[in-house]
Length: 344
Image 1 (cartoon, rainbow, N blue to C red):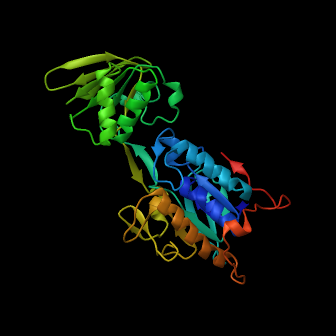
Image 2: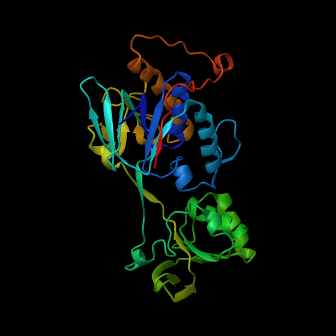
Image 3: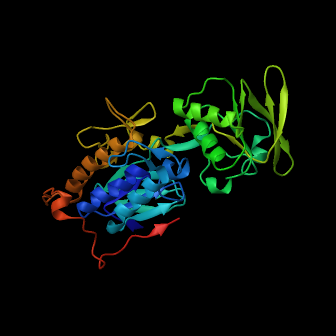
């Protein structure tokens, strides 16, 4: 059983920043995440997408932000259990908690912080009878390694930011992209829509509006898609189709832990972002309170305040004086202390 000071459920940006804040107070963290690498949505869904509202970064790629957060956390030697979902939490007689994962791995700590973002995600799949036959055989709902597809011709369906971002990305990397959308009005940022039309005028993108992919062709792998409009059907030969209709968030097992839930989010006290169960905190997009904004920078603030109370729970007889890092610096743990492990 892994023993630590704080178990953090979720290794997204807010969970990673909590390592740093806890480390400044000499608290050790162990993170659990169902995704097989740190970074949460930033690493899994849009690593190449720029983020514009991180202080000090006019623009930073999502994947680069994850790298920087990992670098910032590194001196405090966090542990990771990756590729395993946190399935259950049991309160012990002394008030501490044991968290057990989907693979039976157990973790013990006096404090638990839930930083699970919007929860677990399932792609919104088109209603095509044989779509499951081509999943990972030409049909992909998430693009987490775009280098594999650069320069290849493809079909992308969708009208939101994700779809338009990837259309622009691949077209500028030498791919010819068919963009299929059921309307001629897009939900993406207006600059992205304008850029997509520019690429279409330049012959790098073909727009199919008032259209949907309704049929898939192929044997073992995808060989073509059939696009339906009101007037006609068009078959496009392709071995790559990305239906990017977003993801449906689900709290998963967290919803069965006795926490107060409101509209698929965990209710917290804004004093320290503690839940209705003392010793369990919720930070980042997974929580809710009056005035809540689902922004990464708000999650950073929540993690900072949560750690202050966590310290008092873990060290009830000690007083911690907060000092600016410009005064105290950033000091990691001594090498003589046991290091956490990484499980995946």
